[in-house]
Image (cartoon, rainbow, N blue to C red; front, top):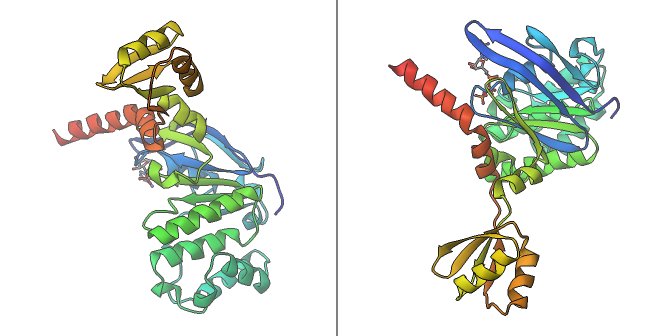
Length: 312
Ligand SMILES: Nc1ncnc2c1ncn2[C@@H]1O[C@H](COP(=O)(O)OP(=O)(O)OP(=O)(O)O)[C@@H](O)[C@H]1O
């Protein structure tokens, strides 16, 4: 692996006829972590990736891989590996034949081909025709192709789409290991749940621009808003003690209250000091899906309104 592991996208605008696909898209993908690129259908994820790879030209803005535009890279596979459409392969070629053909075009040898075949777990199928491959096998082959040049930057468009549970577990672990090697890994999805457990960082997009650029842990913490549920047979006494300690408290059920403004450990300490009995103190955590829904609500509402207008 060589070269700088970054993708920098700055002020991209792209129009397809009446559709503004990219409207000032800007973000940086950093090395050593999996960055999820997530947003509703039509948000501009694929278009951004295509612009970064020089497959589409932007009307405005810049896209750089390791500080350089794709078109200036002499052996691009050594700088960036991409999986855009796993169906795009020559059905009559064997998996190994397909990779050999790609490798030759970039001055890479058969040894490297056999290495990546092993890495993605396709050794036993390497000589079979790719046309007969399942979607999961095609995804593995596409990832093998992306890895051929041992690139510091990887971009995968919806790699989890259509995979069975075993394939999903495999790809999650695999992407994490590629990031742990110091690569910049950008993975798109329109489903947040697909990125749970995979992405460390998220670039959330809607309507051709970035809505949020945030760590997964921070996003969940912000959506959870530090709420803690306390189960107690004496909610009024608990409420008094915690309010005095500076918390905001609401009674949610007959025997439970929701507390905000104090961390769980402090709540336990206050209740104990005031001899208030309790059976449970649970810090609430929003799921990634909930946090995401909150962020993208505006973008989705816009689409729903636009859709209704189109129907009328
Ligand atoms: N070649 C094209 N010609 C016309 N319109 C296009 C073209 N490519 C993309 N678009 C439009 O640009 C917008 C952004 O599309 P894009 O495929 O980048 O979104 P996406 O976020 O990848 O969505 P999805 O999750 O559905 O893949 C959409 O409205 C799409 O219809």
